[in-house]
Image: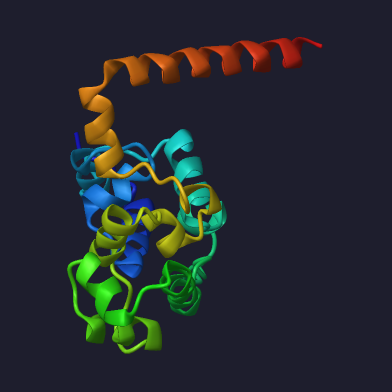
Length: 188
């Protein structure tokens, strides 16, 4: 059944393209699969309130814009300049030369210079390389998520946790304890 929700469809595609994200990357940040994003963009399924809220919160856009009440394109929270500044900070804090930083991140010193200077954009792929090699969160580099700067949930961490179920068990126990504490706090 085709859903006639063309305003949301256009807005989601427009936002995703403005951010330079593939459907997989866009969906991952809001808990959706590639297929779900594709089906929303193709008008096969409607955008529900919960998903609208997640998109607005995660990508910093006004709900009124997403729902078609505002015509202006959203001003996204993170500018290229802020991304460049975070990359510059990460590079400087590493204490490495441009050549060594580039080598460790599997790129070139000229690429690093071009991104820092603004001649090229910091891509998700390049941010991911930095995350894997240097332990600096791609979400911090790209979006300013301070919680992801120093201890990112990278593919390396996920692979490690898959091999160590005892760590996952400890994390689940911590999550349950936190949930119990939150429930007690809310009750008082």
